[in-house]
Image 1 (cartoon, helix red, strand yellow):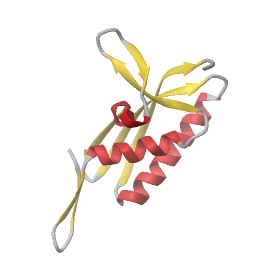
Image 2 (tube, rainbow, N blue to C red; image 1 turned 45 degrees about the vertical axis):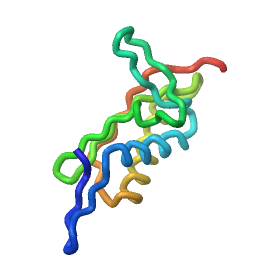
Image 3 (cartoon, rainbow, N blue to C red; image 1 turned 30 degrees about the vertical axis):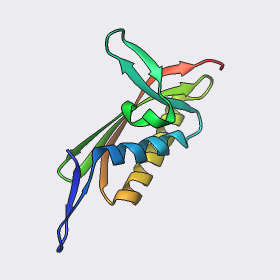
Image 4 (tube, rainbow, N blue to C red; image 1 turned 135 degrees about the horizontal axis):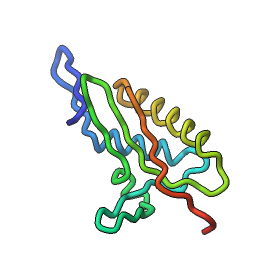
Length: 118
């Protein structure tokens, strides 16, 4: 359900895919992240998504003018997972709130894999 704000002149509606794109680009700016992950439902395998498909690894839920965002990520080997996840959360929250004006209630980072080497 898209995020919606009512004004004196009408309504402003921001689609979930726009919020997911902002969240994906923001997450990719963080150190230690390799990319977003997409689950292949048939096999249970996760694949690394290219820049064009970042939003497939992100779910946005809107409830009572608050956003909940789930990010499925793949991290680089050797980074401290908790620190990278916290950095992703802070960056995504800041950019989404700054660019959309909506409050972010919760951001969940699901680490789906670690990439070892290239």
